[in-house]
Image (cartoon, rainbow, N blue to C red; front, side, top):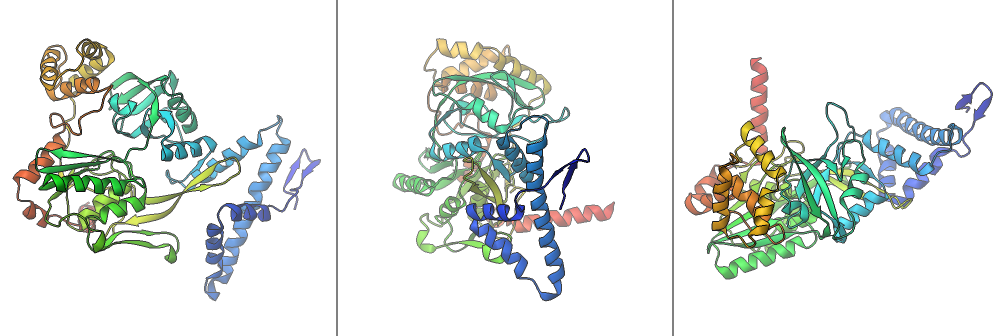
Length: 513
């Protein structure tokens, strides 16, 4: 078959029949995927044979065309081309065509970044980030902060979930790749990196951070007063279940009466880890289930009574927000559906899919591929929907005047200089300085105290919680200590019930139009 003709004279013929090479390549890195593809084509009823054959033929034709176009372009373009760049571009395009932001091609740098994050041995600033693929004048592809990792330079600089990184060391982020972004943020430990942050519509400021060795954090815990155990799960790693158990054991020794689990800004992690943590609270039934393309890919994580380590009569509140995603939604969803915890805060991110990282072993690159969706115990998928709290508690938005005052303050060095001149400031001193600042900057005292505290603790470890600033945490404690918890829990609904109500309300609204 003559696929291409150039100037009516020169013809291009593929040297190798492409489908053989493509299938051989796939079989090397993922025999399971190959087996599933073959199974789909063979396990069809006889009356559908023609359709199945046509589908397979089309697939082979497209695969052959991809290989042929790659070879033709490489050999006939006016300038000599880099095969690696062509390959990476084709792989990115292939993954992007699926339309799933969580299914992506990972070049060697990005794969190294995933491994670095897993092992915690890279110099960086500790921000979990994402970046749109396409950048337009109307919607520039700024880097978006999913969540800062606690006790890292980014976290201590006050960068928050939802912030946009407009530039890094003077390089605008919309027109560079994620690989280039990571290359700019990561680097030699002890060296500075400067980022310009956009918050909301009008606030923009620049912060400088010193790179540190970033270790994947997992759990922080402590007692709030003499009665409440507080666990902040930062990310779900293989060590998380063990660290959570250590926290629970310490609370038992302290004689706790209430438990507060903080999942805010937790971007997720390992589904196995989330299920094992949930198993400490749930004595029986489904924790989470995953469903892939084939029936046998369904996996159900069920609770075992022998794994339950927390008394059933301990009231539990879970804090969530828009930065709570993936595995943190698995835990909060499981506790909610089993009526074991009361959720406080904001609706979660809504990531109800499961990804697998597949090494390709050609250039130390790989794929991150969505292979399944997960479902809560009430059989609900929360992808792009999220989990609503039982009680919504929002931080009050700033007025236009407050935004201007905030930007003016963070762009100045007023707080930084004052704290440097007054090391070791106490809470009373922070409060007094906030009152003084308010005479110049028209902001809530609560916000001013937080800005000062961030600077005070910039070179140290922040307290485990901030009862002065954190309205959601204060409300959670009030619920545990002052309200009839059993009565509250009787009114809670499963995620499935909430989704059914939302759908009915939507249909009713459509009917009225």
